[in-house]
Image 1: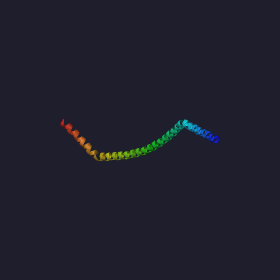
Image 2: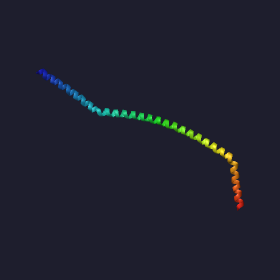
Image 3: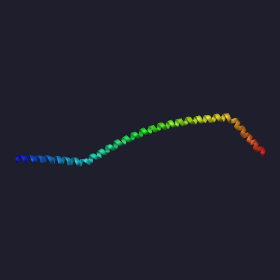
Image 4: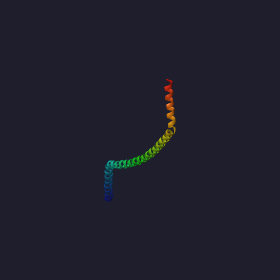
Length: 107
């Protein structure tokens, strides 16, 4: 009988110790969760920063390509306008002159 009481007492002591440990773990849980939240926030911030940097690099490259294309198209348009001007310059001058003379003589 004494050994049963001794075993029950020992078992009770072990269970109280386990309960105490679990209570300590429970008490540490908010601290643990705060730390985990901080780590996750840092991780997500780093990932977001990296994603943003990659996206910015891509957008910058696309913008540069688009700008170069637009500049080439502008240069081609300017060249085309210049060629048309050189081709038609004399004709336009003559047309303007004739219109002026016509208006002057009609008055």
